[in-house]
Every structure is written in structure tokens, then in C-alpha cells.
Image (tube, rainbow, N blue to C red; front, side, top):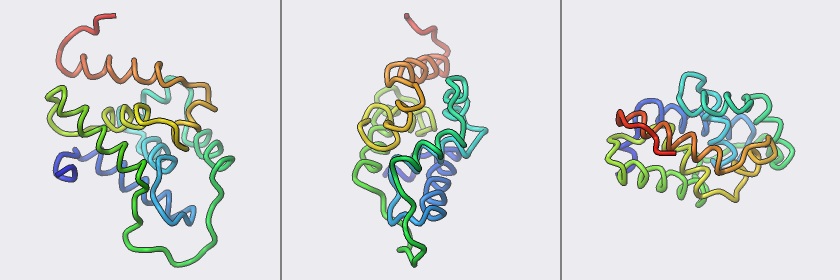
Length: 154
């Protein structure tokens, strides 16, 4: 089960994504909240990579706000459900980890899943901030090679 494969940082990012969705009164946790969750954990690898490309928490939140309005302040369900696209991103992250025998699912796998599934609010925000899916994918792949002690064959 995916929950058992997430490492500590990946769990924290998912929890931060849910917290972000709650703070914005969303009725769900989507890829836009996941992107912000990745950036809220400034100690995770995915946040560091995005930072190298000039993506900050404030810039990402501002970009998300231009596309996704905060909901009305009302009672939300416990726990907040994931959107189908969010579930696809996590499933893709899990598959990427399995494909490369990387052990636990980390934030690098989540970022890869976010980019690979694409075409939802999280990826739209990244594109609006000047990032391409290819650039992020290359950064993640280089990281995965580095974790295995291998040199990225560019």
C-alpha cells in the first residue's frame, strides 16, 4: 500500500498539502495544494530543486490563487479527499520508486509524479512560473541517479 511506502518527508509534504487545502477552505486536496506542500517543507529535496529554478512558496501560492479561488469558510470533511489527479500523482510517484528500486517514495518521486501526470493546477502553476516539465523531469532524474551513486548519462 502506498501509505506504507512514503518516507517521512513525503508524509510531511502530503500533510502540508492537506493543511494548505484546509487553510484555503478547499473541499479537496489537489495538485495545486501538493505543489504548495512541497514548497512548505523547505528541507525537502523537491523544494530545493524548485528553489533553484526560482520557485518560492510565495510565488507558487500567488500563482495558484490566480487559478483556484479559496472556498467559503465552512465545515470541511475529515479527512479531505484527494482529487483523482492527486491520486494519480501519488500512484505515479510510487511506480517511479518501484521502477528504479528506490525503496521508499520520497519528495523527488512526488515531484516527478506531479510533472509526469501534468495538466492540472499544480503543473499549470509551475509553467506560469517559467518551468517546463522537461527541466523538472531532468532535475529529478539526475537526483535519482545521484541517489544510486551513478552518474547521469546526459
